[in-house]
Every structure is written in C-alpha cells, then in structure tokens.
Length: 245
Image 1 (spheres, helix red, strand yellow):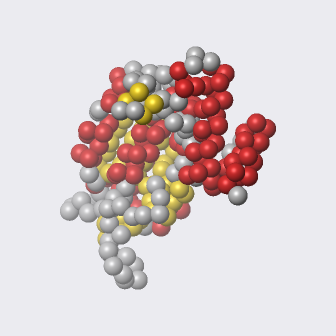
Image 2: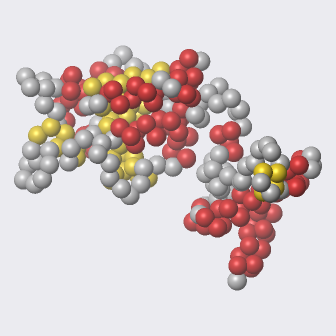
Image 3: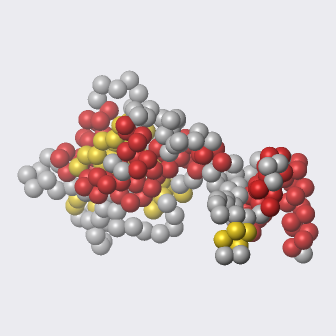
C-alpha cells in the first residue's frame, strides 16, 4: 500500500511514521509513506497557498491550485487514481469500518488543511472522501491524519505480530472488546477471574463474548443497534436489559 500525505508541516510526521508499528510496516514492505509540502506546488512568487475568502469573512482559505497540482503529480503514471481523503471537521465521522475500507486500497492520499477552510472546489472536484475524528476542531488536519493512518496501517497483512489482533479489536466485531488480564493472577488482592485460569477454552470464549456484550451495553449501547448479534448474544442482551429494570 502507498500512503501519501499533503501537509504544510511535513516535519510533524517524522516521528510518527518512523516509529513503532509504522516503522515495522515499512520495513516489511506492507506500506510506503510519502509526505509532501504542497506549498511546493504554489505558482506565485511568494509560495502562498491561501487567500482571503470571496464575500469577506474571518480567516484565510486554502487555494485550489496547489492541491490539485500536488494530487495530479502523485497520480501521474498510475492506472487508477488514488483515493483522496480530506481531513475536515465537516466530514464523515471516522470509524473502524472506514479504516477497513481504506486498508483495502492500493493508494490513499491524505490532505491536511490549515487556516479557516478549503476552497469548495477542492471538496467538489478533487477529493473522494471527507473524514472527521469527531465533533471538535483541531488547528490543522495533521494530527487527525496521523490517527487515521495508524488505524489503517495496523490492519494491513503482516503488520501486527498476531493476525487475530485486529479481528478482535473493539468495533471490528461491532462490539467493544472484552476485559484483558495478565500475570500476576493476584495483585494486591485483586484477582483475575477464575474462568480465565481454568484452561476451559469454551468457557473462556463464552465469558469473553458475554463480557464484550456487557461492556458495550454499559458504555456504548448505541453500537448494539447495528451489531450483527447471534441468537445467544441476543438472549444474553435481553437478560441484561431485564436485570437493569
């Protein structure tokens, strides 16, 4: 997979893309990163990438020319145009499902904006997706893009040490993940649930399934509206609702 980032502050990505899992993913050939300062594609002598909004108003707006030219350069010679993702608080809220969708692409370009906003023609004619991390505003799109890239790259084959890890993550199954424990079995009187020490794999799986449902029911009940539940899960959920009354 190829991931390109267009940013006015490419130095922000140096540590993130060359450490930990991101570094490993590059070393094993799962992904290649490119970070471009789209100011390089400005055509005016001062290399300006923003201007005052038509009609007046506060702040500056990113001009279309540099971003169109940058994406065109990154797409040159490709049979298929890349997915172009605009990081924007007005965009679709990012989810694990969207991460899985991006992870299936061969080439994704992330646009990180600054200032007051984007020229609307960038939204209408350049990007394929607009993505937001949530209902809040950041200074720029860089931090949001880092989070999205991390969530996408960890889904690629041979990136995580255990292939089952992303499959069992919170949200991947439609539910929150079950509680996890490790050694020691007793820490300051706080004990690991006995079922996890029993060696009974069927009992452990049942406990984890029910704990996942319980945690989702208590913390994110909205997720249950769309979760693909089995008959056993629906029965357990009904029991939780009865117990709550």
